[in-house]
Length: 82
Image (cartoon, rainbow, N blue to C red; front, side, top):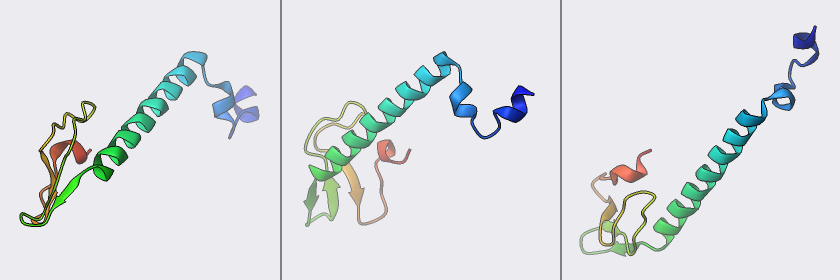
């Protein structure tokens, strides 16, 4: 009977530990998105070599200063693919 009653409202009966993990996972996701946005906004576009170069350290992604993030020939830094 409880399965029929709670159908469609499974988020209300989720275990407390799983809700905590979901919240933690969401906060980590938000932090990674903010770091990625900051990294791409602070990057420098090198016109001579046609590539986007990192201007700072971003430890969440393992990107150091001066690393190439993108280039015109379809190269994408491995930290940005996931």
